[in-house]
Length: 341
Image 1: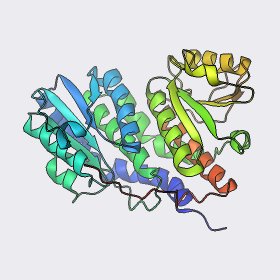
Image 2: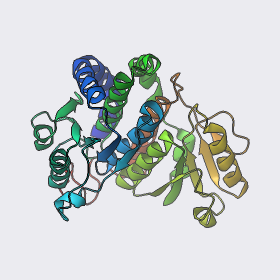
Image 3: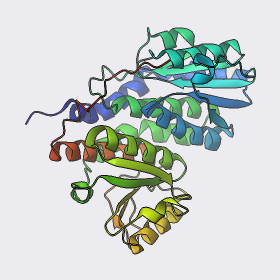
Image 4: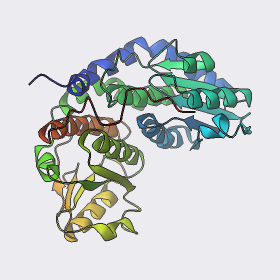
């Protein structure tokens, strides 16, 4: 069988990240210098779909690296409700691989008019979004043909992360980011056959994370819906035991995205507890007592670990879709670019 477009693009991700780090360096440094000079009091994000999960990842990294709160603003505030916002001390980050959706562009334009310094992260330099923003961080990902975004999700995350690292002057983080392509080459080889077997005949599961890895859990849940018609539901490991855990039955699958940070032990404790309740729980850590450990790549920095995990997840979910008789390049009712107002 020929490789799916999704598989081809997953395998391209390490090279796409390398291109971004090489070709985007001067633009990143220039944008970071302007952000430092602007000295915002807070950040906002504008995004939808996979791009919104990238924005959630950047929320945590902004707060951890820069000490600046980042809040998501719904595009309808501008495109439907035409409501002005007090953004004269804000930096706005808009993420869209196509840069086309009218509501995303409308809020970016509105934020700029309201006083924000606007930065777009996009794969299309001539898009309406890039033309509307004060600054643009190009992804240099090349054409993405698969409906399910993979390489543009990863490059969006890396573009935002290197922007923050340059802004903060965080040399340790910058070194970890530049070492990513080699780690991603290894991560794509982990396609989690034991998890695929557990999900083969399932229709739903929980994905869990904490902090930056919660954003990865959200992206994973979306991709399970898009490519496998499995109802994935993402939760923080701090919340899943409150109400959602009541639906867990014998063999109910749970996928925990653990990384090498301060939240790792707590997330593993939650996965182990759900395993004790009968869940078929999997975690990306060797520290679990009851949950199943999945092969994973650690990158030497807690903020780059989640990026390696989503690569392994993508490798797994594409193979799972094909094994379930689903073409991940042609998901029902979906198309590559969705334009909303």
